[in-house]
Image (cartoon, rainbow, N blue to C red; front, side, top):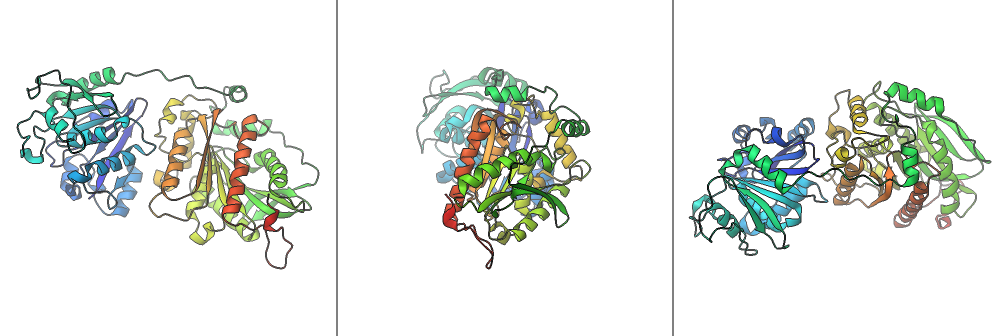
Length: 560
């Protein structure tokens, strides 16, 4: 059994999920996606039946024939067409006693946990599934639309409820769990007023869910009017900015809106290189063809390695811009994590190729090459990968390209305000489309540049949860007022579901680009959580800070 679905639209108002009729008698109303996708994320879902394997039926319902095929070809097509997912072998069978389990499975997959709220649009017998979801997960449902709802509580029009009107049949479909009835305003058992009628359905939560019932639900303008009343649009709340963050974010109103060549020139012109503290060394070295900046204490053993990948939306930035933060990391963490003063932290920052001159996979390949050389040179020392924004995205792309035995050499990953998904389909990507520093138009352009070589979203941001790879622990930090927030949170939950140890942190009032810059107060708070994460990684994995046999070492017990 499989269920395939197509996703489109902008989730400014929320999500509409349309469930098709299992027997193919009813399908999603023509124009549903086009009518609502300017404000709603619209998911048109095939029925949960074996009939989904029929290419003819899929094509008749408006699904591309390519969507019906082998798992590999399906995944490739989903990535290229913007469809979000499909689920098959692990899906529970939709039999009456397992209906609640199936519903929860559908909601979690479609809404991408943590579950949000949605409009459920049930078509024909698909109305039964929509109603079952509303019963099981009422907190996830804003309103219901039943289009051409069945006139029977039993599939095929058989059984004791065969003559009941649609609203009562749907209510009785849930009797196995709990009795529920529609508040129709009519005498029980009477026929509702012809056409589309609005009902309030009481659920176990004590909250009534608005419902539109009737054949004229095919009239999308009637549906639109119903949604305007049931789920009115509210203006976006003014985001809270921590005062220091606001001062920095709005100090340069043009930040994030400059053309990329202008931005590169502006940053280079205004950048002042920090003075190295006493006892520090900085060298630019060749890591198998990739230029890397290597920084640390001159007279100390390199006992803890940070592989730091700079951000910049895949088209901006240079490794040298990481020097101020790398100095801070080395100074702070050498003393905080290492009791032996003969040991120290070192940072390695690769200079990778940038888009649009060098689209994917050039940047990823450069990071991967430098990372592998780092692992060769510092075998035996704990290695932490750290990336900020696009740097975090590149770290994730590199992780996916490593072999399993190579992953075992990574002690942990620090993904700071990660830039991961080219689809920009999250709610926050619309809520903060005009955010300072990194607005949606700039984000869109950066992804267009990075994908200029024809890369598909699924290649740039490989999905988790299929191969259960042995990923190291991952620390994820997100900003509250950032269009990238939700995609990072969703990614973190995907990692959790795949068995990865994840620390997820959000800091109030933060905006993209200014949370990871020393010496801000937020950065100091973030370092505290990073320090705790690293300590946990070292303890849980019994990591040893030692070099190859024959060389001097810093014993593991020297870690605080």
